[in-house]
Image (cartoon, rainbow, N blue to C red; front, side):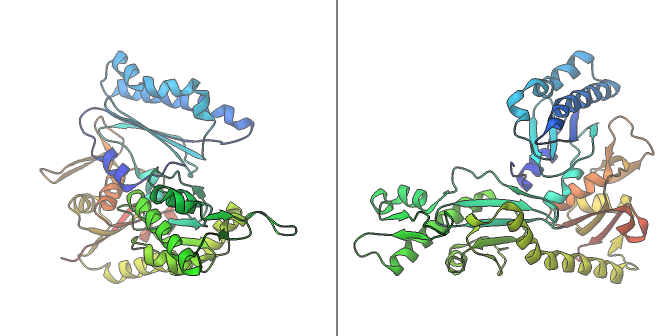
Length: 388
């Protein structure tokens, strides 16, 4: 999968002027149902074109803006590499696609900014984590939730192996080791890398691994900048303290998944990682609910969208609870600090729940996207404000 970051959220949320098309759809990465993917997109693009015209855009201009999305319908290579959900963002100045581990419901939103609330589970503190699978022969990064676990595409700055990291530093030193092959009765990849060369001992091995992890940390620091979710390590036990010393990511979890991750399939890594991180998330959400209940009769909480949206815009929301799969249409004028609510979407309206979510996340708040029955007092939106 491609990593969706808060920097992406910031870029998408700051687009201004014109009409913005947000398309969400479920996709099937394998099997006969994959043939439905391009058909579904074609229908959703047609819906977007109709809505653009309803909003006052001339038909030729609407068709031109959506042409790049329409071209994906017949792009065979594009459909060969899908996840369980696809998000597309289209405007006259920008086109982005994200293949994500979320089973989206079909949705088309056309308005004066992009609609981003369906992405909240990938950007909030509600059950999202990273797992870094470490070995001397391979490094992989996964992004997970309770129900999803997908590999993240690493950038060129992240070394894929100890050999790769050391090659750029000292090609001759890289030749000092080789990876042991499997022996009878032992699976391939089950033995640690063996180091050879005159004067190379345990201390030398540790120094090389530390150097590897320092380069790895430098690459991940760029990839995970502005992230606040937990990072779990998976690897043999002796690698953990070495990586902890090299690590600069402030949300590294002390407990890790033990064992060589090269010998574990994705399902096992996910299962063990979620066992470690589940208590953290469950307790965090319980604490947030408890804090809300304690403050509910004070001026530090609200369920009123008229108060919450401006507060989110001005970085005053600490914790936000929002209902999944519903919208509250209207408009917000930050210059006049004025909210207008409508029962049905009018031209230039936006989903104010979405606006509150995006602004809360951009300003470092925590968002919990919940089912209707989980929301405080059956509300659409509830917030804990920051104390001044």
